[in-house]
Image 1 (tube, one colour):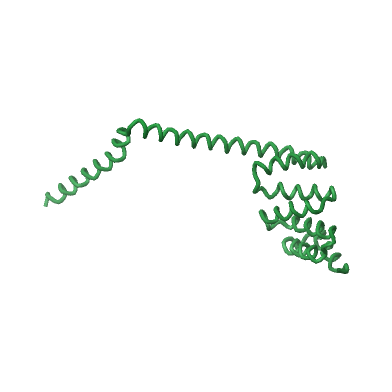
Image 2: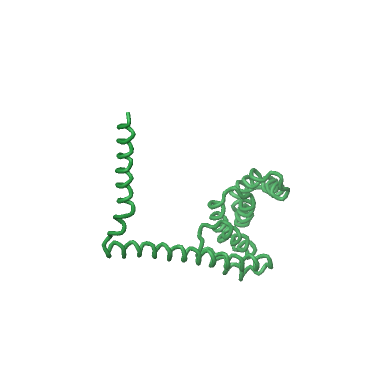
Length: 175
């Protein structure tokens, strides 16, 4: 009866020693080239992490400057900062949405449509983007597309009176 627990204990000790040796002992007998390679990987990871932090800080700084200028309606200066922010984070939908509004204000409807379509593609559930797209499309004489975008804006935010009025206005105007 005592033999079975002893056998189990011996097997556990053997398994532990094998696992210990693989995990710790072999690590210490790596040749210098392997150690150097492992250190380089760690350094590269640190550099990538530092670069990501630096890019994030740059994005936040550029976006903050752009937002401040946007609120002050200094659109030409804000545009430059938004473009710089987009270089750092090209998947930020808010940047393209703001650029679209700036281009609408400048009556640059083609660029506004391009920016707003990108914003809608990156963050599709925002009614204001479709409203602005509708406005820009209408300004270029693309009434049917303007109506479709107005309909999307109303579908997303049916309580917004401005969107509903715009949609009704487009519906009642001739094509």
